Length: 290
Ligand code: GLU
Image (cartoon, rainbow, N blue to C red; front, top):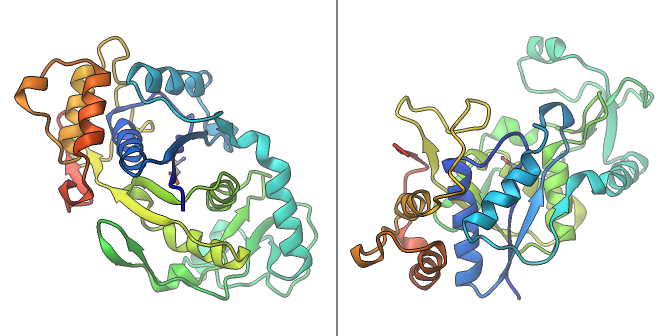
């Protein structure tokens, strides 16, 4: 089967070192497998979107030599497809409307107990939940082997469309990975936990699952994840070499001395030729000074 990988940033801010690691790792893994590498902008959450950041992310990928195959897919162009799947599941009893508040769920112990499954609620003012009759308790990760997941979480009928009308990440990511023919998902270890829910959706859709590789997560010196939300600094488009070298080293591939100061194309070529999953750190979290 032909390898298809992807990088799927949310446009909630500029690319920082942590997202460069995810972009670079998925790019190198795709190229090492002679595959295609796609870019998808996950713009399904307009309130959290930072204007201009989708374009800024693409410009940064370009500046770092991370050129993608084909057209960029924007999730906002896929709303009809998401809704069509939801409607099918509502019709055939695989999903249902829910009007429970956060407070009610918290009072019930924090995990949604399926209260609205048989309530036949109306569409208005409702979230949509998927019926999980096939909880997934573990999955296989290329680096980490069998990853056990929280059993109670796995059994929860989770939200696939929010009450405010926004589509949920787990639904959109699975439908799009199937739509784009993605065969392997390479991303940060912060997304290990939702993987079980995503595998449940593949099974529900009767689609063949992808393989997974979760990369170590970049933490700052305080032990917090570098993220757009905690204002991790944007990486430099004008001088990409140092961040690229640091990202290669972070992924267990420090460049040889003679390549120090080389241009991005040369660094990426070396990365493609020397990439090996065995060399990735085994930790799921790694502190970086970058
Ligand atoms: N859009 C998600 C993020 O930026 C990544 C989704 C994924 O790779 O599955 O965190």
